[in-house]
Image 1 (cartoon, rainbow, N blue to C red):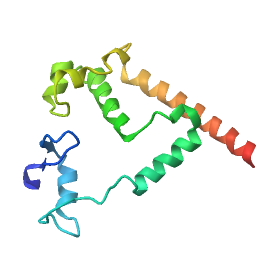
Image 2: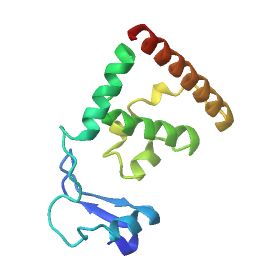
Image 3: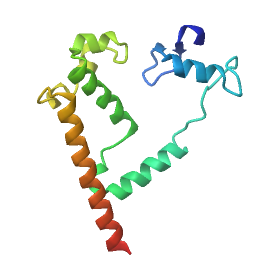
Amino acid sequence: MLSESFAYIDKTKNDDPRGVHLPPYLAAELASHPRGTARAGKGFRFRKNGALYHLMARVKKAGGPHLEFVTFHVFCHTGATWMRRYARLDTRRLVGTKRWKDIWSAGQGVGAIHAVEPVSAVVESLAGEYDAALARAATLARSRA
């Protein structure tokens, strides 16, 4: 269903199949995949011990105890937080995206949002945090040299 920018995933972590909207550029890239799209089984070769997990492990090790909690699942919660903060989606509308099974799963982490800020303020804050992280990494690199 790439022509409709849609994919159907029959095996998910909670055993509930779901449809996924694909941005047009992603549908075009998948349609031109060298192995084609008319094949059974996995579309991608990701697995728990793949390169992405090794990269995540390296980042977590370099980040120390501040990043111990980070897993790929954390990024789902980040997406929900952003949808609540910037798209102003309430819990019911999050469930409507079909990313969450029910209102209870979508409502987890609601208390983590303390303020609605303009994007410019968030970008400025992120830039400051990034600069601070670079400074910490440089200090760490110098101490190991």
